Length: 293
Image 1: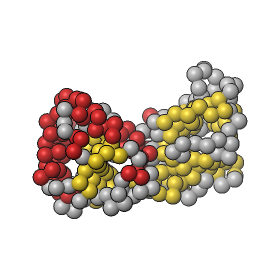
Image 2: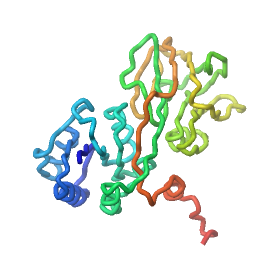
Image 3: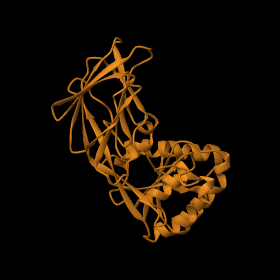
């Protein structure tokens, strides 16, 4: 068996967790590839002997036959890992050592129970769609997002206008702070904070949500993800921000964007005892009203 291990940060409080994890992996004679930056972090913080494992910086250095891609952190770590995994189709095991964890559903407390089951083939795959973005005028690095693609104004109080078309048909002019185009996975993120709906990840849709619209009749809009969107941005500034998950890019104000469903998915490993509704109840505290007891 071959696994990759990815993370961004580690703290002393996690020392026993990682020591136990690597001990168990070693006992199973699993071939391990560690993200170089994370390996340096583990060695610096815990003095773990990570030099005995192979390292990687890009997916080119990983085998096609990789069994699992472990991420340690929160949902942001998985969003970052997506830029490494890209279209390789690896099965991602998200271990939540962060905060909320809608994608990283395996808590550190239940890691080893879940680990034994997963390595024995007892798990479910939740395939998550992504949004791709293209422009004829500029080249965009890692032009895709697992959660959402967002267009926002830069450091100014002035509104921007986002003119949107769906399949070449005019949709609307959005006046305000910007516009979010989200996947179902991202429906519990920024879109939710701006009044967007929660959408089960099994649905094949995009959610179009305005950010602080200066128009009372603007509401979130759900469309099938086989549609394509074109966005034209008008701003008093020379540029605007394009955000792909947590990656911000400043683009000249004349640059137009074309959005569509990406031609690959990210495969999230889910323990058999975990469902999306359980995750919603745990993370959003649904059903926790004292009257339900």
